[in-house]
Length: 128
Image 1 (cartoon, rainbow, N blue to C red):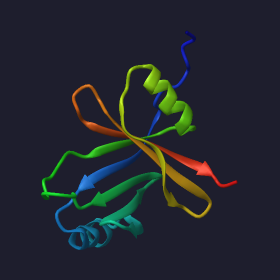
Image 2 (image 1 turned 90 degrees about the horizontal axis):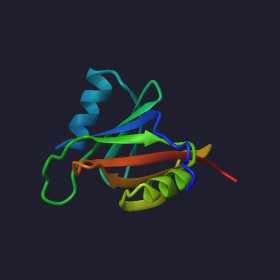
Image 3 (image 1 turned 120 degrees about the vertical axis):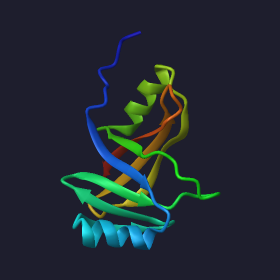
């Protein structure tokens, strides 16, 4: 089998769990002065840190606070998904459309590392 050249090269987004979204948005936007992008259902807000998205979100379910999630940018989410599956990675959520960003679509896929930490692939897909 040919080894594909795929490899993670950039961090695209970090998820930070919060207890109260409105309070957290005010802190990150007004106190830290991080550029606010938008809020999206359910209970998420996005900020821009020089091209890296900071995503705040309230945990679903019991309200437990988990670890941050690293979102890795990939140029082609289909190819990245296929390559990682070939390398033995099991995906919790396969690549899927998440949000219309105006000039492109945001697609995500979720998997865990060897230590059970949640990770994600993210890709901006050009509109046809």
